[in-house]
Length: 441
Ligand SMILES: O=C(O)CCC(=O)C(=O)O
Ligand SMILES: [Fe+2]
Image (cartoon, rainbow, N blue to C red; front, side, top):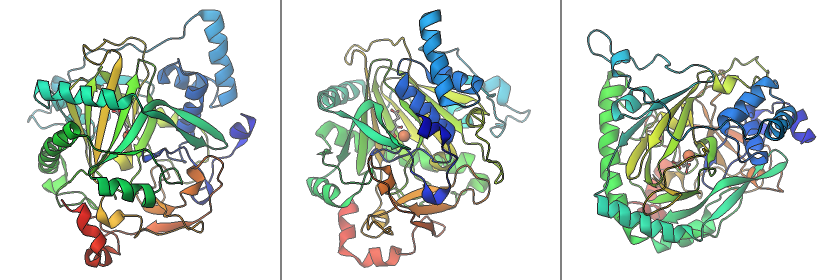
């Protein structure tokens, strides 16, 4: 613990950060997130809100926050916990200007506060997400849930490196790719957590059928987002104008109210910049929390535990059979999490479990045979500068090995360049390569 606490904020080129084979990017600039992750691993029963509150009142010192949480547990009985469902917020009346146009840029949340959103209109106006309720025909959603509940019996927790500690993710998961050939390819070529993973599965039939529907819906949502929300109705810089074609997915299982995932952005390494993700929720309804990353001045070396939370957070209710689209502006500038809770409404098929499928498009140009390698000879990880206002929004390739428990990694660093459509400089080489065709469906 001491070693962790005494560490100064590290620089871009020499850090390790908690990441996961899920391809999650827990930004190393975000020491608060790391501290929260560490506190969460020490106090798995306590909600993120309470952990953050303790961290804030102890000036960001993890050991003191941990002690005070432990004292609280013994002297005051159970700690304050989040409710399953917060208050209903319908913002329609609040946010419409006289002409009916939506005022989405003003932050609606305040430091330390959570705003609960339910309606698709509110969600797409105030977050980089859109949601489709009752996405699949009811019988298909139930059958898919059954299929994945069966799969989830053999899911495992993953471990990741948090500075010099190994922390376990508080839920289970597995990774799926659409064809058997790709399963083999993934096992031998792709790097997760600094090493190759073996538990890669072939997408089962119902999940594959749902994928085709997710693909259609997500592409429509992308077009609608561009037309209705982006400046001049134009796609974002680095956003891919071509069709979104999911070919892989992480399936997460949250067994009971305490299982969760901490605040993170999804790793862009195989998705490229401005990635879109289609996230299907099944079973128990849970809260998906999002918060905007607040950039920090380049000279500000403070470790203010409140900074990460300075604009508060938004909670999106994710019921059974809802499709959440994380749009192109999400991973670079927002973080998301599944908050632990105490009370859940059991689902008739899933009991206490929530299953989540995050459909992703691994792009041919971001295949590890093309991306830069570090001094350890491992394909590098793609990250975006999210915090420091200097270089904000720039992308970089960095060593993967530092994510692996027990491995130090090297100091490799290279700015990543992309054209307007998010294609890397080697795109022409890829187009000529025969390896590409198998990704094109
Ligand atoms: O369970 C969810 O809804 C989110 C999962 C997630 O963030 C991830 O797989 O990266
Ligand atoms: Fe994620």
